[in-house]
Amino acid sequence: MTGTRGMPVAKVAFMFLTVGDLNHGDLWRAFFDQGHPALYRIVCHPKYPDRIPHSSILKANIIDKLIHTSWAHNSLVEATILMIRKALEDPLVEKFVLLSDSCIPVDIFDNVYKAVVLQEASSFSYNPDYHTTIDHSARFKRLNNSRLRIPPQRFMKAHQWFILDRRAASVCANGEFLRDFDRVFASDEHYFINICAHYKIPFLNIRRTFVDFEFERSHPRTFHEVSQSLIMRLRRHGYLFMRKIGKPLLFIP
Image (tube, rainbow, N blue to C red; front, side, top):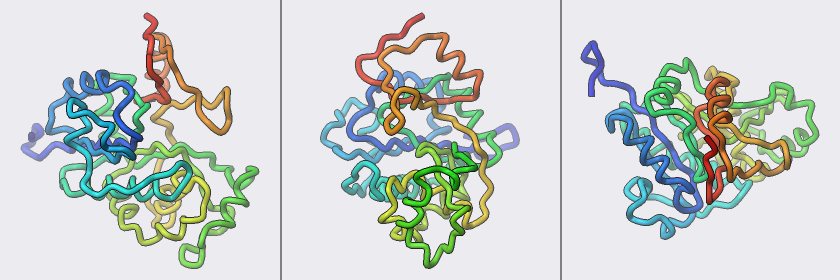
């Protein structure tokens, strides 16, 4: 597919880091059916690939190499890197979006695609004053910092769900410093943003995936009801996706 000037159109890689199948595969199938196949690439790293039925949109997009993953473990970073490497094989992929099995889109494909492609840099959702928080010191001490040499006040933490541009994805997928994060608790919240900062790759502080930590601080709220008014409010605030969406799900007009 080419643009108005005959140039190839940028692709977006939707990377699903899952336990098994999507909680709401019907919503995702409808979402991707709205878009031209030349505009996106789906890749998936499931913890249990046998739990994904052949009817799922993920089945044909499971990457070749899979590793065992655990919550808050560096294996989540490694699995994400494996997906990025697979998506990088397509030279037209310019943006890399990390998603989970409990995510759903909150807008139509065209709007999500345009928002991602037109975003001027990678994006993370992070607290710029993280160095003043309670868990900063404990996590930083577990980093093997002999090579990266990150000053303590510059050690960053971000929400796991990011959007990377191709340069950031390539640097992160290199994996040169992956093992340096092995002992860091929830290293998936640290690796990607700190690697980008280390290589001075610009990024934005934007949260594109809505997550509600209001009721439980360590684990996000699971939604079983989603109203149209909530969806509209999320759109107005620039969100493209939301999680955690459980099963069953009731849509309220």
